[in-house]
Length: 222
Image 1: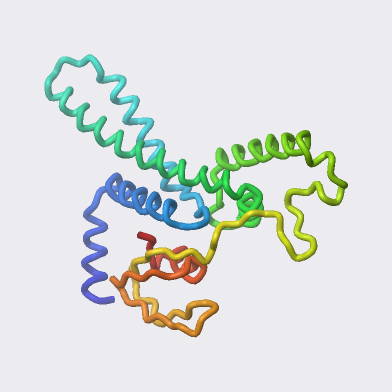
Image 2: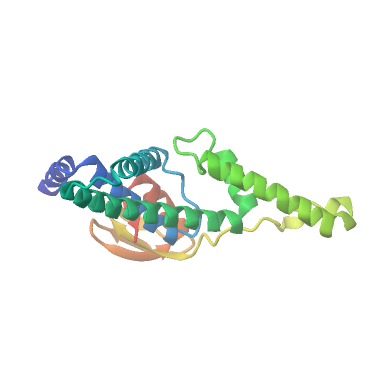
């Protein structure tokens, strides 16, 4: 462990949990907006953030109407911080819902495959939204035109003939990443290029190549 790692540990320990949650939420928000595909749902982080938002809303409601100038100033600070958290949460969820609407069948299959993972792909509310929305779409398509097709052509997830009917995100899209820890030499899949990725470097690379490193925390999307 070098001096930079020691300083990083000291700095993390000296930061409050609320500040760390805000930083982590901001990074998750940026990553979700940048990544071509939906990222695993950060269960613990969102549980803490949403609980803090609920408690702050209750505090503001209880203290509203208090004529004490100090209390009023405190409420202004709390409301400002509350709005910052709410903006990040709303924008984070909108980015995820946009991807769910764009690739519902693909995401549904990935979520089912992640059932045993430490971090599920979707939250319970997102999964309920996805299944309900997809059921409505399937019913609408069936009544509009699919019912007029032969039975073999009515499936929306058909993969016969080597052609998949399931829309998928572009996993080879270029993304910006920052190296948080030295990862050494990385081979770019599908090419003969190899990248020497050192801490602090910023690269523009294919998402499919960097997905695993981002998941492990060695890289972050920017």
